[in-house]
Length: 115
Length: 113
Image (tube, rainbow over all chains, first blue to last red; front, side, top):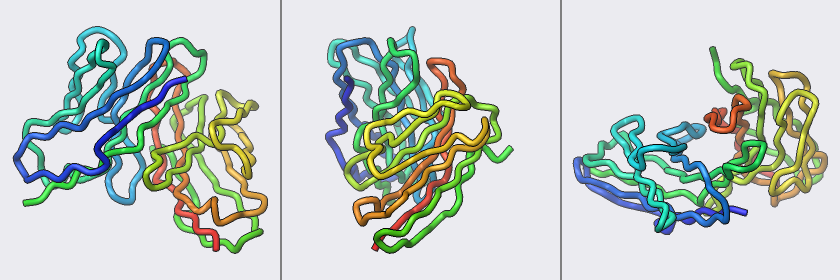
């Protein structure tokens, strides 16, 4: 079984500052990794995903994440945030070996960007 | 191309009432999912359907039933609603390739009194 830990439930940051949202996972098998974003009163949409290859993954809206297998982490970063980045961010993993795609989500991190 | 649509957007039920949440997708996806989202708990999978005609239990199936009516539609039924089922419900779909993205609907906010 897999599990995902997002230690920070809320991250306040000022506009134009950099931000890092942390994600650690636990799994006995190899996994694919995802970050989803949920804007207020909306469904989730994919920011980026790591499947294989380069451990630095670039996503939409200027976000990127780095896969670190030894530390079982997949932290999300943005060098300069905007007010419009205020949202909840979910890290998720999927077992690479199962025959059907089921995502296991973390509990989410609320990013609060203020002027 | 509407993506994933859900109805209703909001619903208030009394304990013991029943209702069906509707979900439809127009992306020709084989796989569909129902999640519930509760504060501090992230998203938890209730049921999923890998293809038309098949359904399977997820993490938290108790108190729910599902129907994969056709390739487009996947409904979630609460037979006898309980306050513990107060939540936001999301439907999602994906193509059946291993690495495909899941696309989410806008959600249904359900309150059970």
